[in-house]
Length: 292
Image (cartoon, rainbow, N blue to C red):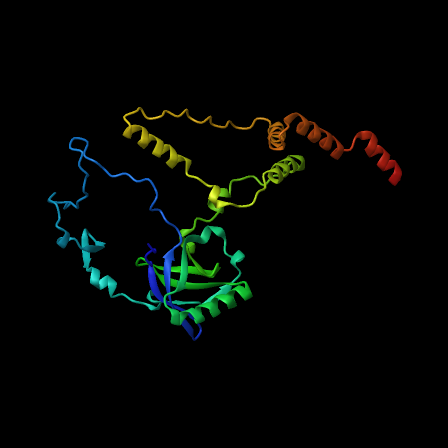
């Protein structure tokens, strides 16, 4: 069954517009989920709102949103009053500017959605906008009201359509200096960095998301399968926690050896290359004499 659009409206570039629909690019339907059960009866538990003063359950018809105005006083806001709040971005994705995608820090990216034409009449205009963006290699910046919040978004060509990614507001992003400010900026040993670089080179591969599997969910499914058969749940041995590195140089050499498949030979090669990089006193003296 085709996924249900999360939003329908118009994509607008200057005076050109077309009808579009937004569909979530991710799917969580296959995720293992649990219900809360009454242990005594085996029945599912239902959540219910309780009046904070009287302690009595509140009927659904009596539930209403309230905005706190101070002193335990609330202004009641009806659902139809909220639905009546409409601004341009409630129904139109108006591209305000174009930027280099690489200029947007990764930390601002939030949720991805597919953007596609919602009818045949809109396909040509949609394709023209998409092709022009692809030709210029630019991403569009717009705004959209989604789930009762206006969100800045980035729009870029993707496959046969467009990919819309909601962006986080700057005020919601914790700045890196709040966390990294105390980190030392001292000079690093170039030999250590070179060893780590070799390890990275050995582990290079082509990105393949199909190889990712949720191993924790698989363990949950094994637990469920065992309990359904009346067996004791499998008891996994806790993974050994890595310890702090005491000798960074030796740890890097050993890691490089394991990545190369032959620890002994790799370590020997690294010792040889390391000694070759470090000039001996005799060599240094010879160079100085020659330059003189």
